[in-house]
Image 1 (cartoon, rainbow, N blue to C red):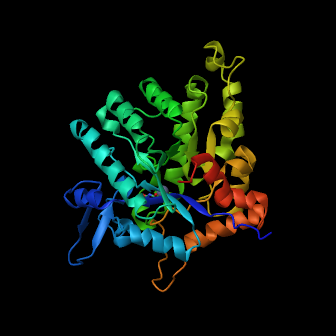
Image 2: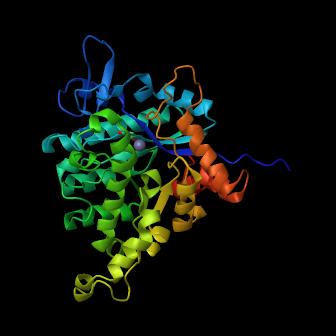
Image 3: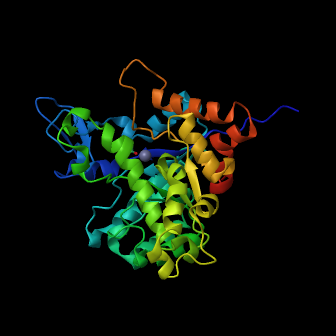
Length: 365
Ligand code: URA
Ligand code: ZN
């Protein structure tokens, strides 16, 4: 019997739908798109750390950011069968409260329609109207069930403005748990600019992207663990960007600091029934494989298990700097990391490359 090819699924891949691009072009504070004369080419400026006077201001923005046909072209070049697309950061975090409900509805509908253009090849993580408040958010979560291609939500680390350990977020996590919609947790804000020092302008985007993003994710999830979110919402499922930041590597240290903390003990937070960091990693967390190396990926696999790793590309970010390259170095490096950590054609490699995503996100139509 001929072996059926196991699918390759990219769960970390972004778009800014055309209407969002129009909004960005109308703005002059981050997030925005504009040209900087004398150059006429457009640049996308989204990160606080990249809104500088230097040449590292934003990045060139072209059709790969908003044309869905470009996504399919990219998938075909890199052997990707299915993509689970998500709005790129900073999502709708900046939208005024009274516009949030309508903005989320129209973006989610637009993304769903984009998926429908390529049935079976595209699914999506929806965007939540975070600035609209609890009731608006819960209503949108319930509405998502009526959309054909939505398989979860993408979320930043600020929640309602106070972070993901905010007790006010608990009903939203419960609504996501009940709707069986996993959260794709993605960083945006990084760390305060002061940690990068006075020479930061000489280093391009390296420090905020390589270190700020992963630390932001690590801190956000650790605060959720400390707040007892995973005991209170026990079936909440989260897919962490960039292999969980540094969570797999630091899990033992976080756990030990908790076990040795007199305040937590006195507050009764270390008793029986507590989920350890290791428990959370194995029961509530999936990790993408966007870590560009087998060493980090092996830590992710050891922390959460081969059945909880999912391939990603972060397209359209991290394009090759040489225009002649058809295949993207960033994607090839992630493929290579999976090959080195899990082999080729092994059950573990097939699961990480697509099997886990198909199972967990129910990627059939
Ligand atoms: N830079 C971003 O702002 N977002 C990503 O997803 C990747 C790089
Ligand atoms: Zn990303």
